[in-house]
Length: 212
Image (cartoon, rainbow, N blue to C red; front, side):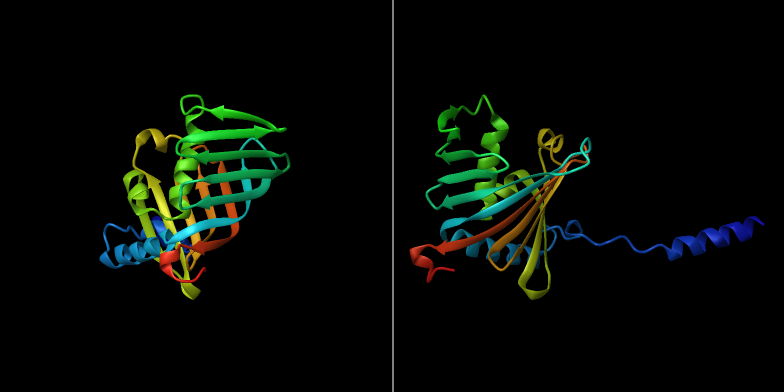
């Protein structure tokens, strides 16, 4: 009877579907080809004078049954200016340049010091690097994973190296096609998650050829 039970258990285990392969099965540092592919993509994306478009942010919290959704516009240029304007469900704008962050609500401007809201400053520093795929910045803070898919699609996985960051961020998955980022998914250790989807245009710098 024991043998029969073990046989049933084995058959049940064999019937289970294999675990879905993810980008985190493809560490960059362990594969020269992936290093070259990511470096080439980063070079292409960094040759940008201006990025401008729309975003949709969907945040899912364990304590809520429905996601929180916000929409708006953003601008990032080669000089480091970053504008993030929420238009729905409320109006609120952020403008970031050279470490200075200005928030505008109901026409009233407020300068935000890094010491007052470090996570907000960190958001703009990080997304400036991410949207241009600045390798030095990303490699300094994250273990990187990368794979190419069909039709010029690709995925980049990021896991925090810093333990303090890992307490609030489990990982990120960045999905794109060509030199465009389509979606960024962030997962927190609590199980909460955020998805940012982008629709934008890149304006190539003058020394990189025609605008994309």
